[in-house]
Length: 581
Image (cartoon, rainbow, N blue to C red; front, top):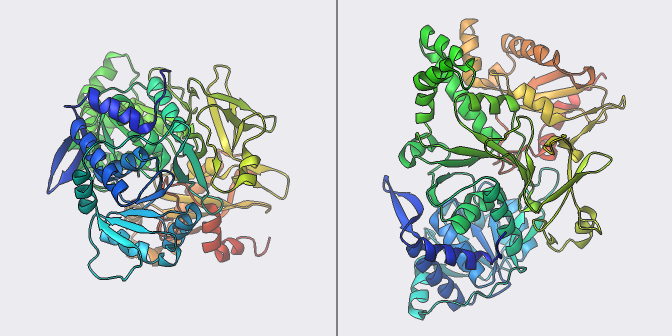
């Protein structure tokens, strides 16, 4: 790997090299506009000078509370130029958790983008004691009488323009670049301290394993506050390789934005791929009998044959057109991807490169490489990254990608990073003979049954979620004699089935108790149980109306289930499974 530079140094070098090329694209009044690298460089320098003029300096923690947009990138790069430490907040977090992060990290400056986020910030006002300045993009409509100094982003930019000159880069390679808070799937989020070296090493290693260059266009829709998107969807492509990044308006507009941008790369989590898969099948089912038969025939053709070439031209090419027609590869992370899903997309010509990592590892540890993908694995270690499996099957890793520690939590840091520098991931797995890593499950999330057997809820949930009538499942039963589940039906599919059974109700509140729907789901669970070991079978379940949501803190920003929160919310239902056990 070439000599590493800090994030702003690497960015300014890349911007100089590709000055006239597009860096960022964003939607404005119905059309995508382009920011070139030279424009982004100039605006970043002006913002850095402006931030310095209002007192932001090295070591300050700068909170970024914004959806994906060009201003997020500018605020990050400008702050890092000054040697400040950025602290991103997921926009979907509750005010309670946002307040915890602000207070825990000692945030002194916050950038907030929209009025909706302003209002959420105000609900956490009791935690804003240490915050001195708030920079806003959209002005608040009412006087909230906050004690903090308020600045518009335009005003800060004007100050920077008036100051003139280019700010000196104050950061060094081993300085903290960001405090990124974990998803908090088992406890309150912890602040992970990642340095410039952590990010740049992992970004460079990632684009070495999965080559990206200045001709690629990446469509970004995963939150930049998530370290997967931060490293592989921002620093790696834009800062290190000069790739163009276009921001989707939202996940809801993803199909339209893909047609407009025609990306060559997208990064996602398995849940999004599941929804795309379900959408494809839904469209197939609505087609004629001939089209349904043609699609099923096409899926059975083997790559490299003439019949597969025909199937690709007649069927799959049209499906790929929905991705914009230029998609070269997709990257999946954040959770385990169902290997059946990966195979399905491979059949239709959409390459999914699955990787593995954690916030604490910047995040990528391993990934599959295009052309040598092994389904059911998360690939091999990045160059420069060490991995080994402990006797108890826990995955350990060591290298320049490992965090310096949890912010203000030295004892907790020592628990996960041993004296030899090995980070204990908390995930269990094994290495194949070819050194591909296979994930078994999360150590803290394994269910220890009263009969001494061990069950892995994520693996069982993947089986259940693969059923077309089921949207989400939550498997529980720790220290009990059998497993049970909370199940959210896929209401679109369920209503279609119930119509054929002459069930008139369309209200999910009533349908969760509808005997015919319960019988339908029971039949599916029975078939799934046939594929599982005796102790892994789901013995009882309850239907619930709403999907587990980020708004209720039940799902992390990477769409992982926050198990302790779900148990808290549904404790009565879970207890009822075992009343007579």
